[in-house]
Length: 218
Image (cartoon, rainbow, N blue to C red; front, side, top):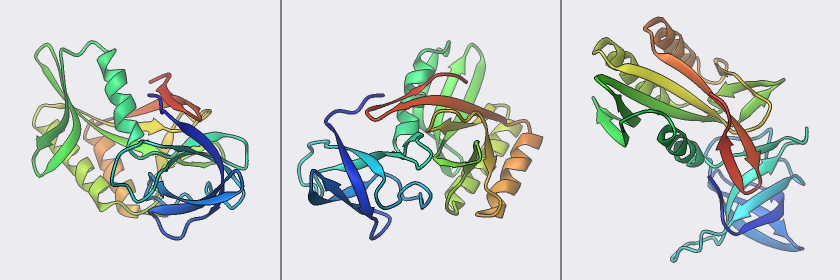
């Protein structure tokens, strides 16, 4: 997945979860943050960030903030829409005979439904942007929606589907994601129950550039 019109900037502050103030060549600009998570360990005043200018009409902001370099030097993609896009590209290279995004199952929309022969698959995708000491963690903010989706995957497994929870790791150098129990204990419990029920937990390692995100293993 590649972005167009990438611009480098310096992060100044984040007044709320939707916008940030950045410096572009000495000029302050308000930009949209494509991640409603906290990202406090990433978006630190003075850090390098990268923006994309979609060019769509009727926007309040010209740019979207999509990538940031952490103080450790590692580049993170923080675009919350990117995981589903790269997984769609990745699934197209696998041997599924059918791939349907945004599939309605139960009371939820599950990210992907796939078929291979007589087998049916459901996959929910989560993007991981929180790294601590080389380990990925999810979520970085409470997510009742995430718990609901895991419950649906558990039900789907009981109904005969192959069910998977896939983590897109939006940084280089991290190969595993653990539930952030301190942030959201219920999510950790749901993930434990998913494993016990036979739901596959998949870690999709990525390579990140300022203008791209690519799944490289998984």
